[in-house]
Image (cartoon, rainbow, N blue to C red; front, side, top):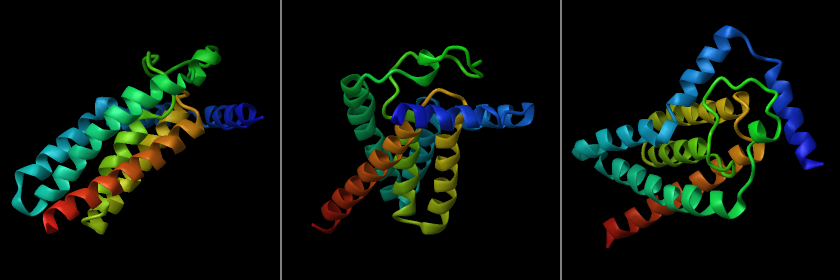
Length: 173
């Protein structure tokens, strides 16, 4: 039942494809490739005294997410990707080799965006919009189920909140 619902959403998204939107979604999803955008963002934030704690939170969150999400959960859950199950859908991106749950692009994006939002609501809101677009692109491109994306959003947000709390607790002590 759940698989039918999730595939229903993904198949609906396939009806939205246009050359312009395809290019946009490929570009947006590439920002999440290997977390590079978020690593660069965290590194830049670390360079300046007034944003150093934000950068630290971004980087620590990304490290935790890599271990928990990509290292542990993906292999523990071992969920096949929608593009592996239905290979009749033409992929616009390279077919991923790792498992589907949670979405690593979404996980990293929400770790970075929420980390920034916890310190600066204005910047953070813009980064949250970007994170949501990256998450959406993963479903649009047929490489993740909606629950993979939801799992990445929840886990990424939780990790960012936890890291923020630990950094602030350490800073007060």
